[in-house]
Image (cartoon, rainbow, N blue to C red; front, side, top):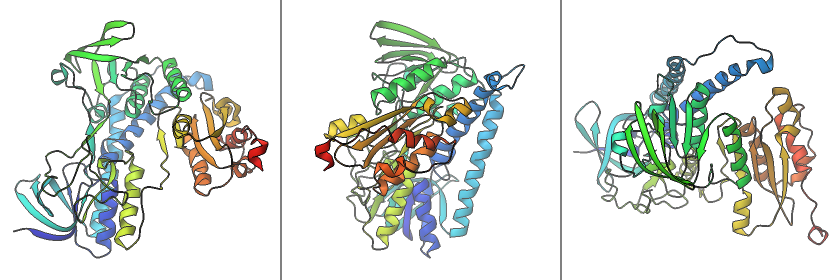
Length: 468
């Protein structure tokens, strides 16, 4: 016999959690099935724990350079058990908040692994033992992703770290090899370099942060190289020998020939893979794309009636927590009779290196690919007086403005507080304000956002024929 619910949510990540609390708080019978991470990966093993340790690394970095600020330290060492405890304390607090939300809303949290045994039926193997079969009038798939592993000889014996294990280390690796120069790879490479590890980043592509413009990638790599991180770009890993945490050899083919990189630890940060295998999606008629992500339309509906996808397991979704939260808002409004779509949303993002990289809207590369004519303005961070007061002058700001109108089409910043400056530009884009409004605004001095005025003052004038 199955137990019937109005709503079943497989996975307790950000969007699914908020949906459960909203629906249950509105009087509906709701159950959420979660294998392990209450609240999803973001507060447990991904976004927030990573940024927590990134900040610990920044404090260590500031102490190392304290003399530049007049603060003298006699000696400095990283206590990774204390770093880990600080991170764990934060995670425990976030989980407690999630559990409180379940209790207050009335949504039922079931700890176990769920799989479809019918179009609208899930069998749950409970973590505590036994099984339950749940039937739902409407079902939401919020199953997330996991760290991908390279398909290279020796990978099984290597047992590399993922972001999960890296954030649980109680010691500083002597020499850490990072596979991949994307978000996770770059953030953790800098973090462990600042904790005291030698760090080598191996990237198959020709630049770090592959989605970014070449000037952004170059500057980011230059800054990280200055900190002592070694980069091998355009490199193909041929095989591994040894075991991560002990002694490792990585055999690599580079542009200059084959070489061997020896280290103590390896972190796999080559990307993510969706958690869609082995959960019976075919039983429910739910389709996947060629990379295993759940096919959804712009209302997040799957091909199966009354089944939706949420978050990073969905095809076409950027893999950010703030996107998952917006998925919740789309579904909430559409369940209430609305017609909200993900097609028109403007998604910002931020890479939390130090300095951070933030972008919203088009990059130069995307504008060129789409045939969009733009006017470009660029400003070094050193021209922003706030940067001089805090002694952090690396990076630049860049804006793209329409060639034939004054609309802001894109903004990129690599520099201190970039993630806080970016929403100012995002708001202007959403409001369709001409760039001149920000250019001429009175912005508090001295702040990093003040640099927007100087940046936008550099936008070239429209050609006379276009300005008419």
